[in-house]
Image 1: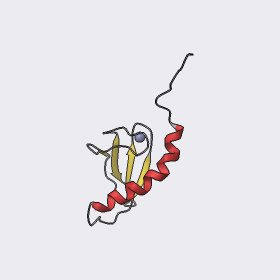
Image 2: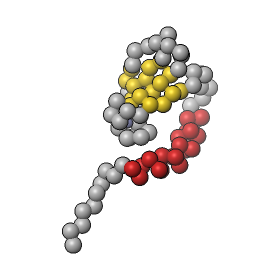
Image 3: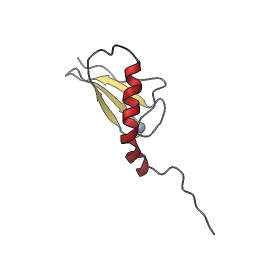
Image 4: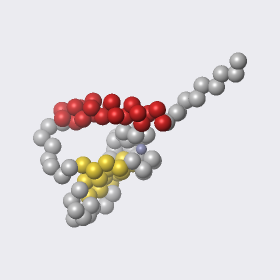
Length: 83
Ligand SMILES: [Zn+2]
C-alpha cells in the first residue's frame, strides 16, 4: 500500500548533507523509499525489519568510501586566492 511522504526529523541526506530534507514513503510495491527534497537523492530501503541499530553504523562506514567520489563533485568552499 502506498503511503504519503513523511519528513524524517533529524535525518541527514548522505549526498548533500542537508538535515530535515529527507522524506520517506512506501510505494505500492511495498518498497520503502527515502528521498531528499533538497538534491533529489533517492534510496530504496529493503522492507525487512531491522533487528538492531548497530547495523546502521556498519552501512554508514561502508558508504563513506563510496561517498568520497561524490563529495569531489560538490565544491562548497572555493578558495579564491588573489595573489
Ligand atoms: Zn540531499
